[in-house]
Length: 237
Image 1 (cartoon, rainbow, N blue to C red):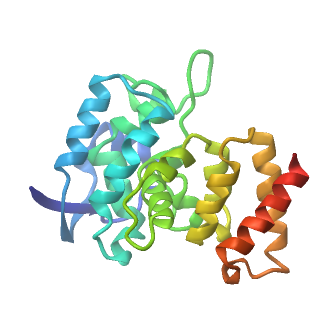
Image 2: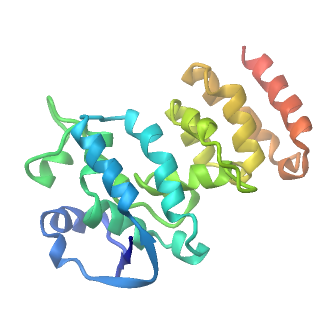
């Protein structure tokens, strides 16, 4: 069933996050002129909490549903981080905690405390800016945009993007660089690098990034990109 979609009237900043999580009703929101059906996403989140799924295991379980839920929205809504802030802070605040902390703190301030026995959750996991980097940090937008860049031409097989989220290093490498906006590079790099150790993924990403100044990567065919990445991978190995 379709329901109203909201966004924050003003983007949150780190200093206001704890207060917003403690008192979500005090946060000013506005209705977005679009509707979505959150039924499947809400049911899935309830099921994941019931199954006690935490950490990186949440990514592969959530990514398809997050993408199918929001992919019909216009781009100006999708790139407005205030909607993603609303999802993380107001609508589904348990998911950022479970993904990055492994449990839900009694008080939100505890979740941002560094100390013995405590896992620090960066505020960007609830927030994030309207940049490539920001899209790659917010707990929900990172899933959506990774899938959206991988799933061009109405592809319906989410297996590759689920595989991407088995390597946090590869996902960060793609989401932090402009070539990560190119769908074919996302697909090929995931196919070629996802099973490599993090150290080798970092080297391969840096090498490819260094070529961006001399080669227009988006003009290469998929075959040319595969050959280029194979060469880089051989050098890394």
